Amino acid sequence: MLQHDFVRLISKLLGRALQLLVLSVLVTSVTFLLSSLIPGDYFTTQRLDPTIRPEIVDQLRHRYGLDQPVYVQYARWLGNCLKLDLGFSLFYRAPVSPTLTTGRQNLRKLLILRSRNS
Image (cartoon, rainbow, N blue to C red; front, top):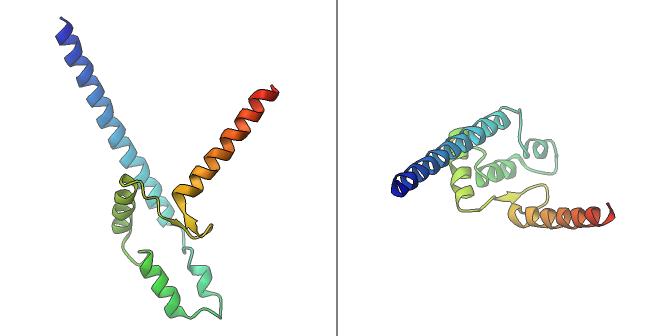
């Protein structure tokens, strides 16, 4: 009886893990697709700057893979996420992972302060 319950538990856990995997791929792919439908990218505004040559913008788009089809960009992004490499933020000009860690630490400090004051 105990062995049968253990097998059912493992089976249920594996089923839930598979559901989580499918849902994660579905949500990230739809989000990635929708964000790619927005006209332009980070370098579109750079093209408007007369001091930046169009060749430089093209090189940057190539460097960051923005000249690739969406499915190639998604596959590369997903592979990097699985390696915990979230890329480079063009906005902050820094790697994304430490930027998120800093934000999470600041949020934790705010939550601790808030809990002490309530």
